[in-house]
Image 1 (cartoon, helix red, strand yellow):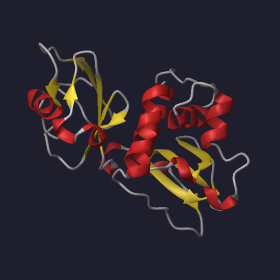
Image 2 (cartoon, one colour; image 1 turned 120 degrees about the vertical axis):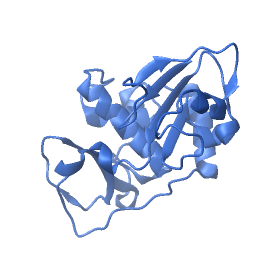
Image 3 (tube, one colour; image 1 turned 90 degrees about the vertical axis):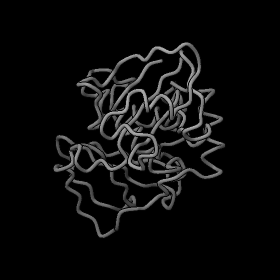
Length: 210
């Protein structure tokens, strides 16, 4: 199985590596095998995705991981990693600057914070490694967030185009000390956990994962 570590996480100096097993094992057993610092079962500061689906949707730490699966792990408490994600009302005035990406998108696509942070970090890493799936990082983010391969469908599903003002927000992410926002609005808080709507979205994601 493939392991991918994002943010400040690493295992013996590596962020991507393979783990060999004779068959499926639980996520808890997998984390015990690679236990190192923050990589500990039950650590509330870990967000784990199995093939792009958040692990709580699959049974939590009892979820089975097959030999062909890809497990992505990132820290939920990301302040010290140098990367930050913030969500603001669409009437926020954003100062464009190097090291920050701002995307106007539909509020209804931001189901829970773990998914938003994971998607933003994927786009950020893709930009750094010249692996964007679109010409612009803003579009890359919408494609990953919507789980759509076609740009037009991604924009239609999660973009701001054609949406009422009360459904449009601005997601800004990038270097922690370079996010410079001037706004009269407070940060928008969304749930750090999953909910029933998120479970429905995960079923759709399984069919259209990039």
